[in-house]
Structures are given as structure tokens and as C-alpha cells.
Length: 323
Ligand SMILES: Cc1cc2nc3c(=O)[nH]c(=O)nc-3n(C[C@H](O)[C@H](O)[C@H](O)COP(=O)(O)OP(=O)(O)OC[C@H]3O[C@@H](n4cnc5c(N)ncnc54)[C@H](O)[C@@H]3O)c2cc1C
Image 1 (tube, protein in one colour):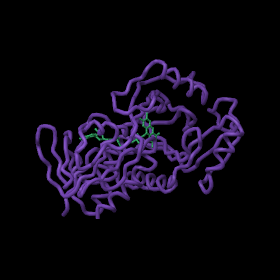
Image 2: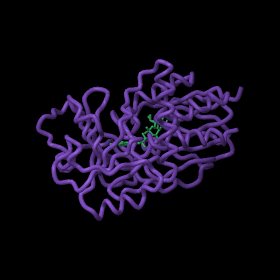
Image 3: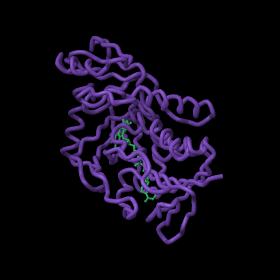
Image 4: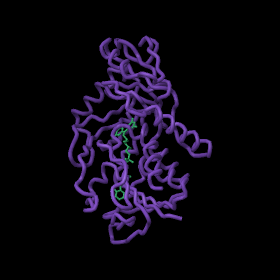
């Protein structure tokens, strides 16, 4: 049986482990437990992006595969809190509605009168309902994928790979395998890049925060600028909003950012009845890298804000390339 090392156990690494094990690889996932964007407490599965309303290529396919995985894991007894409820994208004016409409094409959707969503604050022009969207608990999905894959999990930091399928951990321990898949996310760009991978590609890091809430803000996630969504416990108000940076750094929550986030939340819904339970800050990496990076090395990173929408789909494709 061929041995595979996967660096990183976030949604990219855990999905790769799951699909590789299905194809007969003996998988070891190495994770240093430092920072995972995939720990996001409630990730939206939202095919219509940002305030531009872009629909990424293959969004519908990605969405369908993520839901299929969640259903399979749940049927097998894994606890993956999620809501296949649909997502509401309110739009402020007719111009934005027209812009969104241009991208929707075949994607199932309905335009609602904004008053039809009781939680939504008064004043939105219309509400786009995306019935195939929803939310998922990020860490629970990754944990379940890893457990279901049967992969060995090693806590350690990979300091180097040799391009031939082996990795060296901090402390000097060498792990031998036939191939390596690099899924180190934003934090992983801290690792010295082996010479065989060439110059580091242009990727950017962007931090954001989710305030975790005692209670759910409502049954349907609301998203425009920021998002309010149910979570395994209560709910969240969150967004990725800090300036893009060239390097990873420990994500912070400047007061001005908190102010911005509360403003986005307030625009969506009254915040009066909601209590903050805690906060989670994370950094995501943009600039997709998918494919072969060395003779026996592959990479899946830079999933941006679409980690749960496209991560499993792209991991499935990557693993097929391994042979
Ligand atoms: C605030 C915020 C909100 C978000 N909201 C959404 C959302 O609503 N919907 C959505 O789809 N996406 C969302 N995202 C994006 C999503 O979280 C990411 O796209 C996705 O989690 C990235 O997954 P990944 O596996 O590539 O990286 P990560 O989850 O960061 O995983 C990388 C892993 O590699 C490990 N690692 C790194 N280097 C090494 C090394 N040298 N050795 C060993 N281990 C290493 C790290 O410890 C980590 O566990 C959000 C991100 C943020 C920050």
C-alpha cells in the first residue's frame, strides 16, 4: 500500500485524507496545532460571494459534495453540527439586485420581499434566498473526516519536505512515505519553503473574527458584509475584514474592527437580544494552489473564504491526481 503524508488537518488536509484513504492510500496527517482557519465555529456554505454577488466556478458542485460528505458522516454516527437551511443574502438596492441576478444563472434561488424574513432589519431592498446554502461547524467536520479516514494523526511541525515523499519534523524526526500533500493553510506559509518548490507564490493572508453568541440569531443565516448564523451552541456574528497582509501573524481584534463588525451585524438584524459568549479570530489564505509541486509532492492551499464550499471538491480532485 502506498504511504501518503498530509501536512495540515484543516478542511483541505482532512478532506484529502478522507478521499485518499478511500483510494487505498495509507495516510498520516501531521498537524502542529498552531492555527487552523478551519476552526471557524460556524462556516457558511454560501455559493453567492461577498457584496459583488459573484458565483465561483463549480460552486454548485462544491456545495453538493460538502453536503454529501456531511450526510455520509452523520449517517455513520459522527457529530457534525450543521444547518441545511438555506442562506439569506439581503441586497440594499435595485442596482445590487441586478448585479447579483447577472451571476445567478442556473443556481437555485428565490427573491423574497425582505419583510418575509422576520429577523432581517427593516430597509433592505430585497432578500435573496439560496435554498442549497447553510452552515457547518468547521472543527467538527474536520475531526469527523479525519476519524472516518482512519488516518494516523501525528502532532508535530513539518520543517522540510524533500519533494520525494518524505518530511522532516521539528526535532529532526523523519517521516518516510511515497508522496506528500501540503495543506498548511495560512500558518503553513511560515514554514521554510523547500528549494524544489521554487519561489513562494503570491498569496495573501486575511484575518477576521467571529463573535460567538449565547443564542441563535435565527434559523436562517443572514449575510451581507458580515454574517449572522446559527452555530452548534448559540450562534455567531462574523466576517473576514482585516487588510490583506503578505505574512501570517497572530490574528487580533482591533477595537475599530469590532466596531465595524457590530455595524455590519446591526445593519442585518437588531442585536438587542443577543449576548456575546466569546470570540474566535482566524486568518485565511487567498491565492489558490492546487496540483503537483514536486516529483512526489502536491499542494492544496489558498482556499480563501471558500474553504468549506470548495475545499472537499478540490481535495477530491487533487487525490485523483496522486494516482
Ligand atoms: C474569520 C473567518 C471566517 C471564515 N468564514 C468562512 C465561511 O463562512 N465559509 C467558508 O467556506 N470559509 C470560511 N472561512 C475560510 C476557511 O476557514 C478557510 O478557507 C479554510 O478553513 C482553510 O482551510 P485549510 O485546510 O486550507 O487551512 P487551515 O484550516 O488553516 O489548516 C492548516 C493546518 O495546517 C497546520 N500546519 C501549518 N503548517 C504546518 C506545518 N509546517 N507542519 C504541520 N502542520 C502545519 C495548521 O496547524 C492547521 O491545522 C473563514 C475564515 C476566517 C478566518
